[in-house]
Image (tube, rainbow, N blue to C red):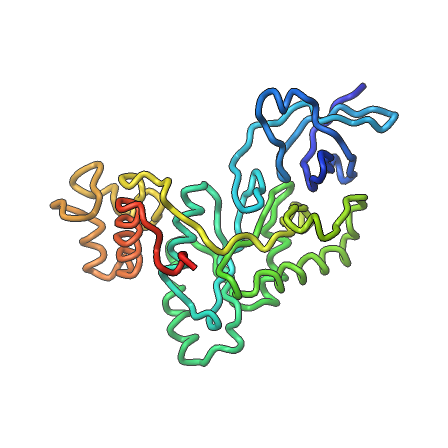
Length: 297
């Protein structure tokens, strides 16, 4: 019997579909996973023991980069964060929450501003100005759907996994359906017998896109940041973290400490005040262990 490495692209009822060199094999997990209290997830890199008679088994779970989402996807490299211009209205506070969460999870983010075509020119001018700051600190931002669809296949590197996230009603599902439809037209759907009935709606599957994969889940719309250690929060605001290297105190929390470079740059307009305000608000939430009002619905 030979062994091969692959990526789990689908899972249901104890069976795992694993892509190995552009082919999909159906497998079962060995009991050793249960003994170790390990649960293989879609996105996991695994070692499969291949059998000519079709009895293929997962025998090893390779180290996992991360695990995010509900339902969970493992080894996510990037998130395409969908934030709407209107309906619901654009929110810098919400954007900062997402960026903080994914920085904490060590996942890169590409921002897509949806519904820009139905927002007023005055509103779009303000949003573009605000998003310029995020581009300046290193985030890639798209607002044109056609440009996104042209560039996305080039951005998704070989075997890398992307997923979507963003506020409810921002258009994640619409975008996802379009991307999956186009991917299947261009590359052909990976053949699999995985059932897609109503009882499987909470299951995740990966579809090929570019050289990698996109998870066919619209991601999640609500996040919490309670598990972040309050004194480490500044590490997940990349602009604040960069400035903090010049703070007088090494573990400066950017509150009332003298010689704080972050507060100095906020006053000079070099760090957006809205970012600093988001930092203070999230910090207080973590310290109080409380949920923001708009997540209590």
